[in-house]
Length: 86
View 1 (cartoon, helix red, strand yellow):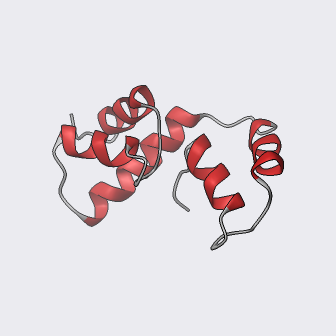
View 2 (view 1 turned 45 degrees about the vertical axis):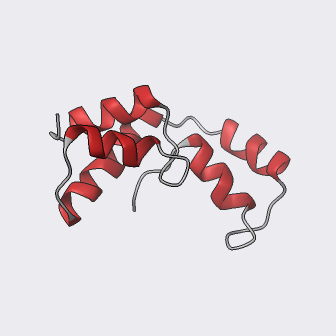
């Protein structure tokens, strides 16, 4: 399974196309996890690289975009570096 960012997982759980929890309930659930968001970013980055080529900057943009995975810029950089794109 792919990684999720905190914001991305909250969006997935609360989306009309996802699980339809309230944003408040989704936030409480996600915040109760002991997730390593950096490692999730690395997992997402590796999956992107397995499907397509990305530059370091392009992968960071994809991982941190509000239309993409919604990782923080720091998490996105960590993921791209750990996956070998930078």
